[in-house]
Image 1 (cartoon, helix red, strand yellow):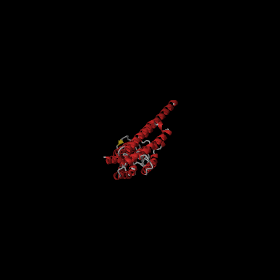
Image 2 (tube, rainbow, N blue to C red; image 1 turned 90 degrees about the vertical axis):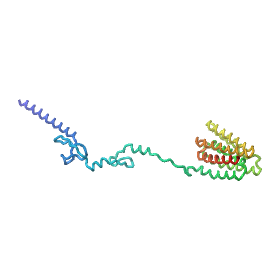
Image 3 (cartoon, rainbow, N blue to C red; image 1 turned 45 degrees about the vertical axis):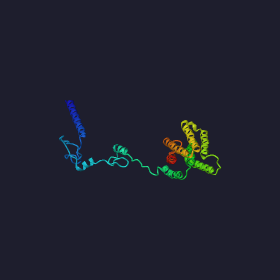
Image 4 (cartoon, helix red, strand yellow; image 1 turned 90 degrees about the horizontal axis):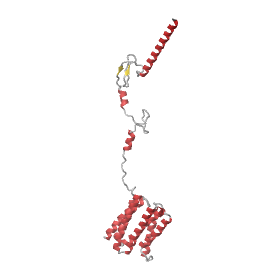
Amino acid sequence: MLLVGALDTDVESAQITAEANLENLIKRGRPHPPAGDSGRPSSTGTPYHHPNTGATTPTQPQAGAAATISAPLRRKPDGRTPQTGQHVGCAGTIGAMTQTTPPRRATVANRWPTTLALPIIAGAITLIALLDREAELFGPSIATMAGIYLTAYAHGRPSTAWLAFIVLSLVVTALHLLARTDLLPADPGIGMTVALVPLWIWAVARRRFTDINTFSVQTAGMIGFGAITLLCATVQPRLGAALAGVGFLAHGIWDAYHFKANKVVNRPWSEFCAVIDLAVGVALLVAAA
């Protein structure tokens, strides 16, 4: 009997212990009331379960808590919120990405080749208006412009066009002076056309023909603009002025092509040359009309 009594006592104790453990687990899953106040609703706005009665009491958030909850999180410069230190969602990033920057207006600073061309155009128009020698003065310039492209192409550096402009301008000026003093028996246009040949040979010697497409374009330009220069030197002055105008306009198109392709010469040069060619070409055609 004593053994049976002991077994009953052990079973009862185990049952009591299990019930206590179960009650503790249930209490752990329930929200706890605020410290020091077991019967007052929570200020967080969440339902409160009373530990003794099991009743659920709906609570209302306090004014301060509501303001805290509804206030939007402000980002720091590094993209984190001051309250949590976490990154705000991608909405701010997407908004920044969708903002479009207004296009920058063209100014004198970024259109300096055009600005640089304006005084040259003014000087050329002045010569056309004052002198009746359009074909003689402007015919050799067509071959000169072709020579500038050939020099830059043979050298392999697009910026060389500016140096070639200075050098070949001095050459054609010297040819004009020699022709005026009868020291040069040929027309300056013929001399500048002949000068294209060694420039083309220089390009061949540097194996620039490996890019067959560009080499073909430059060779065709040398032949075409050289032919126009020779015609200006051999026809009547009035017709020569018209041919010079056509040559300048054609070279303006040539400049626009190279500006778009961004080959042989740099874009500031092609812009500079195109503005001069188109303006002077129109002026020559008007003078020849």
